[in-house]
Image (cartoon, rainbow, N blue to C red; front, side, top):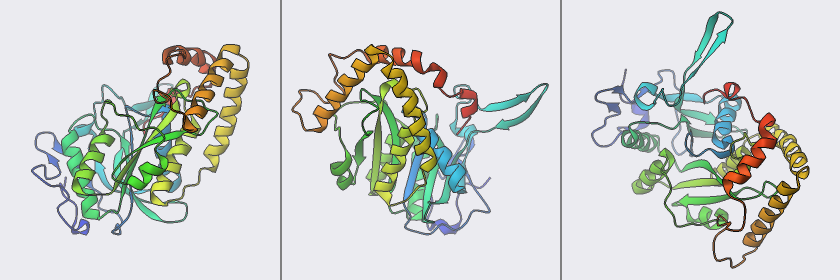
Length: 328
């Protein structure tokens, strides 16, 4: 398999000694021979599933990108090099007495077009388990070769915030105008790293304009497929890039989802009281209250585990079937 892109990328896609290949395990990626030409100067969107995907925000975004926009792959990354199959197993379909198909995991760099036909570069799929440095260096090299204009990535974390308020974001990166306008929580803390974090660091070091949006998803809905989280992710990408996405179907799903959640919360006095407390804290924080701690500090509230366990009991029959969710 080839280890470099065609001359269309304009320069060697990888800096340093990796040369786009893993020396022992085979090539890191393969160029798609039938890939369309990619114009220079496009925004790049990064959507990787994995460790931080509260509300299945990124998984649903990838589903929408692939199903609605039908992106054309330019580079396909090697799962045999990057993925731990035993930790995140692909799916097969069993039909009575035989297997119908094997759904392989996908991680691709592609050319896509938004609802208005505007082109952009999309890196979407699973978060790599292995070869992080090699993968990050490869992606930065590919982006430089394609002369992308900006890089935007999204992930989602659970937070003690109410579902009755807009999903807030924490914004990082080098685009200070986005951070100043849209970062509602600016902590100083250490968190487990994701590939998105490493890519943001490497892009910033290379001088590429980059922005990372952390969606602050209600923690009691973090283990469900929460449509509002995907909508917030798409809106964040739109703010950063000017791209437009048709999310009407997801918005309708969200209205139905919230109706069911509200019905269940209203039927339980404890959950209703919890929600009111979260709303008061949220409103106070957003109004500029001089709280001693940021909104994540909720010392007088039930613990995240207690809240999640209680709502999971009510939402259990509403949660999606993992088998139907599939690999993205």
